[in-house]
Length: 125
Image (cartoon, rainbow, N blue to C red; front, side):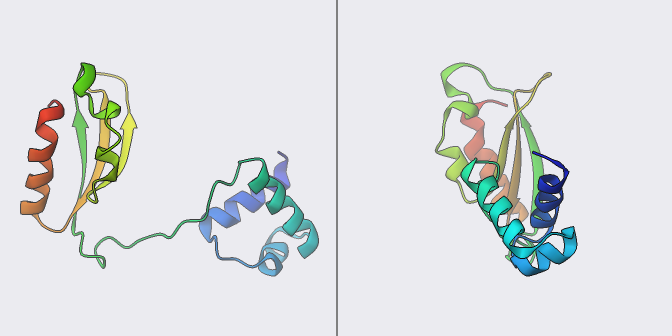
């Protein structure tokens, strides 16, 4: 990867809907060269997809919180892929220190958030 690839990635991370024409204007490269570089980045697995940025408040998820969890053994939240599928769970990260994971959660209300905490309780604290 060279500086031009990184420039393309920065632009695409800011707005993945940019056309090759607009990308070429922003990075000062021809549209065919931009298309080839983006194709190469996709095929090599550097670009893994294109995603929508969601305004959680407008989507009805007004409570957004980070939850640190300590859990051990087979019941560790990191070992249960079903939890990542819960609609309230946006992200799960393995961390170091006195907790083993950090979750980003979005809920429609405090009551819904408390329900998520109750569902997480069997996995640890």
